[in-house]
Length: 129
Image (cartoon, rainbow, N blue to C red; front, top):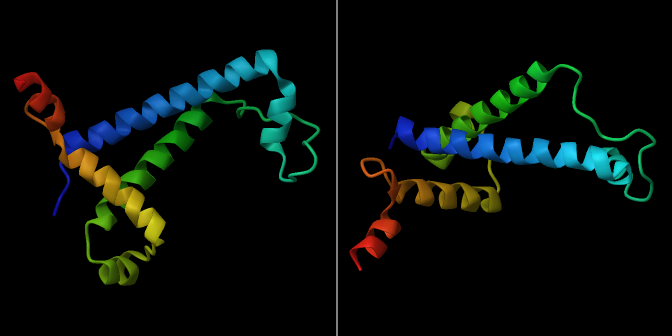
């Protein structure tokens, strides 16, 4: 089974929106709450880090990191479509049951997407009513 490019485009756009939301939230926190940013950077659950969480100096670094995450998501989606033993032996992918459940849910949502209409099939049913 293959997944179409338009469906992968949906994943890409969703990740872009999440990234934009996260960057906007970080910008807002920088202006309002350095304490929360210190906790975000901390590895210790009992003490905040003395320096607040911040973005890398170069904006291209964030873009590169986001693109790596997108590639990783595409890889996970593609490898989840093969048999579990093949995924383990050939690709070295071992997912927990919970991870597989999330991937299956994502694939179900993508399967509900009607590429020709540009909307979810459940929306079409509501339009018919």
